[in-house]
Image (tube, rainbow, N blue to C red; front, side, top):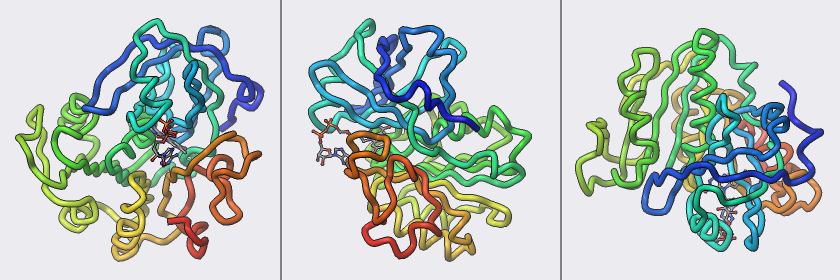
Length: 283
Ligand SMILES: Cc1cc2nc3c(=O)[nH]c(=O)nc-3n(C[C@H](O)[C@H](O)[C@H](O)COP(=O)(O)OP(=O)(O)OC[C@H]3O[C@@H](n4cnc5c(N)ncnc54)[C@H](O)[C@@H]3O)c2cc1C
């Protein structure tokens, strides 16, 4: 699969075309590049990210939460945590932003043909895994069993509830949800377990043979989920982790996102666990 090296260096103007509030602090932004030719040429590997510039704010790395739509729209699922993301949340449809990228390696989906795929998302980690799931479902016959396990803090923090309701009705994939604690009924008739994601792994049935696992979530999640997966017999090179680091340039120049000798931006953000074992501070 080719990336868009020719178009990645310069921020391209884009317009916010739609906003969808997903939870108290998280919104899905649909954007379209202003240059229709650039929009059509954009190639995305699930798991890649863009550098998003918000005027008078700055630039932040954000995962592509979907493959580009037929209308060339890009979807970014953004949590309001600080300066730039707060400013982004004040924008309305029609506002101008800019985008560099896509950057990073993404998930090696072409190597996964014929395999079962287990997606494990914690909280906002659903964002890059959503684009992966879209890819797998778009190429459904190329893959074996597809299972999504998604853990959120509480029912109100579950992102993409309507989509999850639809997915729960599909017969060609398995969906398991869990919340740390139940403050209210899960919305949209979603069936939810209670407890942490590693607990969900040991509590439900899924195929481990010929299976790859893709994991994204808060830092605390990685070590315990990897341990669980290894306990189930997953080899270290079948576990793929999408990592987050403070990042500046996004193209391997500034070293802000170094993980040992690796760069999160260019060697990642998706890493095989086998390549991170022994790298200090990786997990
Ligand atoms: C490859 C990659 C993909 C990402 N994808 C998404 C996404 O899809 N959606 C999303 O909402 N966020 C995503 N992030 C995180 C996002 O880039 C940060 O939340 C953002 O840069 C914060 O900018 P700010 O100016 O709003 O916050 P700041 O004012 O810079 O910081 C606010 C707080 O957030 C912490 N913080 C800032 N950046 C990071 C970071 N990269 N990792 C961990 N903590 C951080 C700071 O330490 C501080 O506590 C991604 C990061 C990376 C590296």
